[in-house]
Length: 469
Image (cartoon, rainbow, N blue to C red):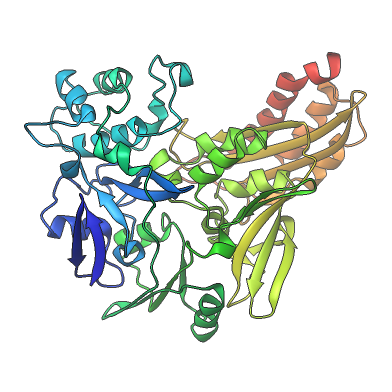
């Protein structure tokens, strides 16, 4: 059994090792939470989860279809049914109703939850994001509607005020968050562990080298749902303090591997402009509220969006295992398709970004949709210019080879040369021939090569003022 507080009531729910929160909620009669895609694309399954925010709580929307129920043991969840009643609608429900934001209604509960999460965001201020009420419409980016159209839904978002005095969810923000509790669950489909300490987590991984390491679960959850993947042992590491560090020193910025991308985005602000440009293009807010750097790097996918950016930043990884901590440059981390130097029993503990940062940066993601899509090509840039000359160039690439990679030849074609159109064109031709791009359903090899070339030309065009100013 797994214990949760659901809509304010403590509940015990039966669970297997791979039971999703969505399945458990629907089995418990909370059918507002729906399955539309089973891979975190549509938002029909969105729920609110109470997350620690300093001494209090932040309500964040997550995809219940991707969250394993045992990973939420002890958590506090609010579904669309817990936001209001037919006689006393929540403001998000009221605005969506009166502005015609619901037609078939399948997606409506998920939209209501995402609207409520942004409604409850404590930093929201008038004028933020160019909206009179400060509402960030990108908070809805992971929610899809196939019949109503988005205008009335956005109208509802723009009409939402701020929580009134006595709003129970707003009042909950000032109270302590529930603590992640140590969990061990044995079931026919596997064993789930949430060890309380790093030492115990490493001991479990040493005893079970093939164990599935779980943080946000936004990648593994897709395999569980669509491919019926099962792990004999799952080890949840998202609550380990050693993996949740956040330090901004004079020589290095240290980001815990288990911090969610939304958490990192808030904490970093504009400290790392390249990451600031990258965060909004990584999936959706629903996904970023759960996804982690450790998970994105741990899967070692050649189309993961974080490696190109972190390669451009000269990032290093802290790998912790039975023998202690070792630091590996990210450029040396990937060894083959979904293969890395991480040894069995090791965890990614933190990402280290050296400072001072290169002043000229850019991130280009080429995809069929501008937001919430898998990239065909992703490119991260970090350049230093002195006296009109490129003194250092770092270019990280994704989607053009079996692994993410550094564009060393294009970097060499830039370094020591004036930042001119001629230099950019020469380096762009080299960049276009980097990697071993293939043709697939996302893009042809020729298109990928052309986009690499055009990407560097765009960076030069947008930053030429750095030289002429």
